[in-house]
Image (cartoon, rainbow, N blue to C red; front, side, top):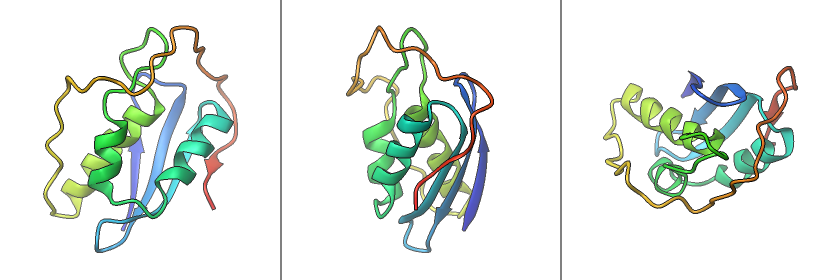
Length: 117
């Protein structure tokens, strides 16, 4: 199943996902954002179960922002699971972020799609 998600609060504008019937991530693309980071995150989740990816990515901030591209990817995955009619992962909003980088700066708008092959 292909799923399109419009991000909120990040430099990336959208995420395109592809999940198979077993809820394994087969494709992930970010529109905009920091090209290297979004491409890296997209490649890392390929082959991962959607629930596992949500658990790992949920709650990661970007600098002073409350959200990030990985966090938005977790939101996109939750919505995609709901659209598939499957159980949405129950993830606490209070998960301690795996990455705290106060010096991180958002990417520039207008960058090309970062796509994991």
